[in-house]
Amino acid sequence: MTALLFGTGGVPHSAKMRSTESGIERIAELGLGCMEMEFVRGAHMSEAHATVVAETAHRESIKLSAHAPYFINLNAHDPEKIKASRDRIIKTAHIASLCGTESIIVHAAFYLGDPPEKVYHAVKKQLVEILKQLREENNQTLIRLETMGKPSQFGTIEEILNLCSDLEGIAPCIDFAHWHARTGGFNSYSEFAAILQQLDKKLGRLALDNIHIHFSGIAYSVKGEKKHLNLKESDLEYITLLRALKDYGVKGTVICESPNLEEDAMLLQATYNSL
Image 1 (cartoon, rainbow, N blue to C red):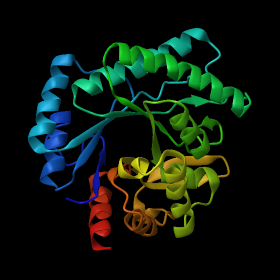
Image 2 (tube, rainbow, N blue to C red; image 1 turned 120 degrees about the vertical axis):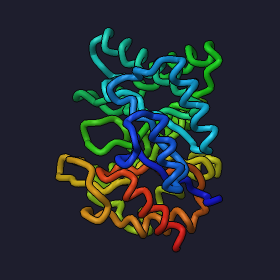
Image 3 (cartoon, one colour; image 1 turned 30 degrees about the vertical axis):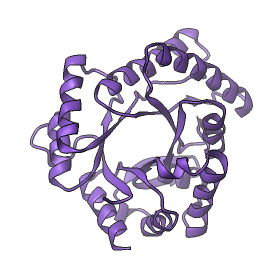
Image 4 (cartoon, one colour; image 1 turned 120 degrees about the horizontal axis):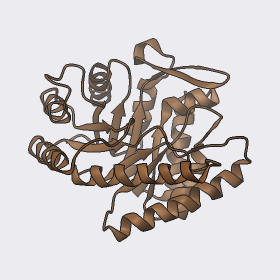
């Protein structure tokens, strides 16, 4: 089995139906290895349905993850918005766990004009409470904080890795396209390698042996990310990045978020296997 599993963010376009189960079956038919369930508008799945999803994924040997709703800001200035954000993360983790996933992906916060250090402590405080509730419910789901593509969003690589180091139960989701869009750089072998080295140094080899990556082409401006693109329509040096992942023996999950989903996921997998 390949060291990295490749799959799609959401149900493949070519699935027979728009259901999660049909998506899993299509992923297996295409020879891919994973799928991320997109709960970005809310984890609107019943517990009974989640158990069927888990059975389907187990039968097809497909690894699942789940993306929490976009409407989350653990640095919101309104206490009700903080509570709603926490509830959305907990609900996602609950349903995802029943689906058999080991991790959920979260966009943690916006700066809202606050100093980054203040936002860091605000986010950390809320994550402590969320983790406490999940563990009380015997839910061991990892919360993976995603590196974000706009300067207005909390989620630099350093911020994410520091939280992962500070809190057990928090792990990174490295979105290389986001980081390229946010910085305007990080598009060469040495820069990709530097991120992998940073992961290893801060979190240990396990971070490279159980990585979670988001991958796509990206359009961006001085304000950061604009929209996702198909890989061949973007300037992201995806082959160079795949080479770095292979050279460093990285293992885990690569979720393709290009508009064409499974086409680029299969391109990534085929390219990786050819290196």
